Length: 190
Image (cartoon, rainbow, N blue to C red; front, side, top):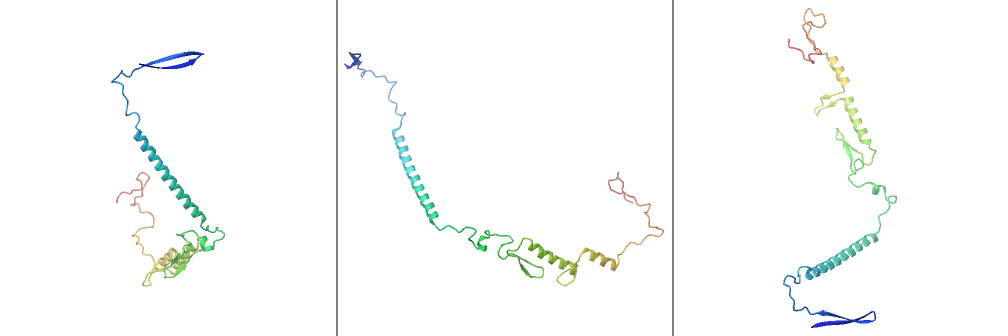
C-alpha cells in the first residue's frame, strides 16, 4: 500500500508516493530510552522552582529586616553627644574609668581622663622622693640610694685596700705579665 500526496508546483500537478515500510524491522536500531530522562528533567524543574521560591522568601524577609532597622531612630551625630558618650569603647587605656597608680606608700593617684604624660610625671616624682631620701625596706633600714651618695658614704667610711709589699715603689711589678695582642687578652698563670 502506498500513500500519496498531491502538490501543485509550477502550475502542474505533482504526485509523490511514499512506500509502506512498516513491515521492515531492524533489530540493531531501536528507540534509545537513555537519551532523555523526562523524570529527571521534571525533578530538576520542580527543585529549581522550590529553590527560587525559598530565595525569594529569604530576600523578602531580609528587606523587611533592613527596612525595620532603617525606621528606628538614628543615633545622634558625634557633635550632639556628650563628652562621656564621645569616648571610645572600653578598654580605654589611660582614659579608662578608674585608671590610676598605686604608689609605694599606698597612696592612690587617679589618672582618669588625664594627658598621657601624667602617669610618667607621678612616677618620676615618686622616684625622685625615693632617691632623695633613700630606698628603705619595711624595717626602715636604707637599702638603696643614689650612686653619688653611695660613693661619698664609702669614701667617708674608708675603703679597705691591699697593703703594698715591701720594696714596692708603686710601679708595675716586673713579675706581672700583661696581655698582648697575640694572647687575645689571656694572661699565662704565674
